[in-house]
Amino acid sequence: MLTSLFLMHTRQSQTRVCHFGEACWGPFIGDQLPADPPNRLKTKDARNPGKSKAVCSTPDIDIARIREVKGAIPGATINDVLMTIVAMALQEYFSKYETSSLQQKVRANFPINMRTVTAGDIIEDEHFGNRFSQGQIRFPLHLREPKAIFQNIKSQIDVIKVSPE
Image 1 (cartoon, rainbow, N blue to C red):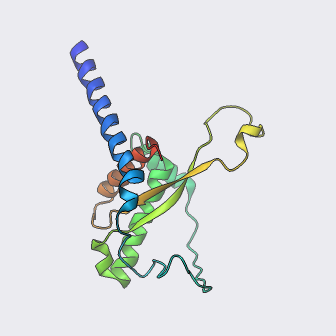
Image 2: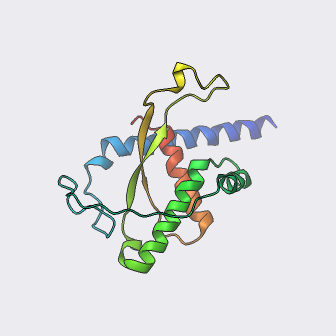
């Protein structure tokens, strides 16, 4: 029993060290690499985006269903499930309009809540203000199985959680 606890602790420590190494890659090396290739959704000139706008709407997403999926997968978060849905929606879009992008790198920024989770009163000052950071995720458009997509997204988000960024 003691040996299995030691091995489990060792594996967890190795995973944390590996995630920390991956997390350091982004701010120190990854940001210096070339941008993503162009696609239909990417702004052509990010420094001069222009004045045209596009709006789209989707049916509501039932949060109860998201929570149900989250509850069925050990260790999952609502954010993991939502980002998996976004990845699958992008796959569907690119499959229909631009299949070449399914094999390219497609990344996005998303907000991360930096507030501490407390059972306290949500009216207190600690729950107000702009307390968020940004995370960057690469959508695994090359994967087809929803479970594989989820695992890829989850591992990226877990790395972001220990990132020094």
